[in-house]
Length: 127
Image 1: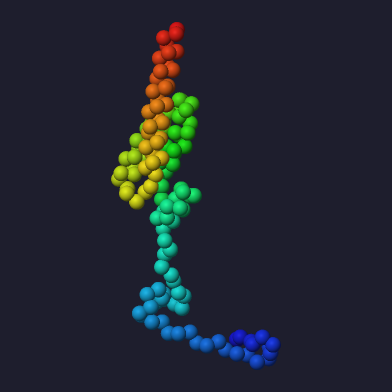
Image 2: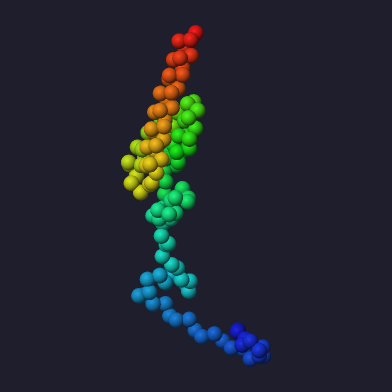
């Protein structure tokens, strides 16, 4: 029972709920609850993808971070392998994003791997 503010002694009943209509698209047929359509996918928004890693391949994210450390030359071969795997995953699943990270990880992985090979060869030749 509901009460009107100011007079707690006079109960007022709320108006009845409208009947469930089959033409209402989001009415829950099982009860009196209303359900709403799912919201937009955050991976569809370019601004959301800039802020959060939504809709991205996990391998592309890993390749992006490994490319940062490929300047040290030791993780460069790992960045190279992860970038190749990320590119293959992104080509198979067109809904995922992150191709730029994967390609840049590939480029930096190649450059770091070449630098690592040059360093190792120069250390071997010195001995």
